[in-house]
Length: 134
Image 1 (cartoon, rainbow, N blue to C red):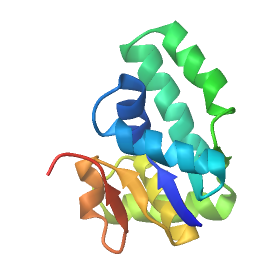
Image 2: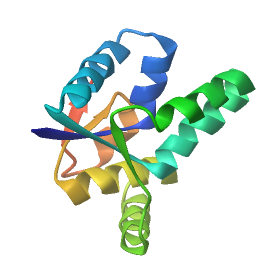
Image 3: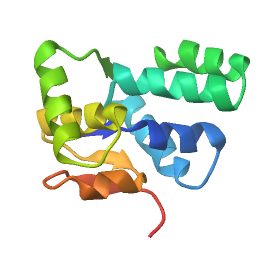
Image 4: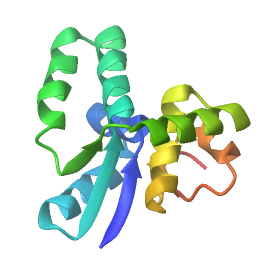
């Protein structure tokens, strides 16, 4: 079974119905059937919520809040060691703090990070399942 970490970028593409979200739809299906294991940091789940609330609507953010617990995604709440791993990545690479949690989770589980956010290309040693442009 292949494990993947989903970044908030990938989820936002999926929610918006844009082409990169098609890969997320496929992996969610695999998660439903048990052929894939999908993970997401609780920090990134919250990031999706606040971006939706700020840029789209409160009702869409609330729909995400309700759906996030029902999707075949394991939401990992960072432990103290995860915090230090994310902070170390943030200190080494030009990525946002929320993105550092996604990268740290992918490192922790030694699996690819699903994204199209170009910030992640700067993180050495990070395995990406690239669904973004180019």
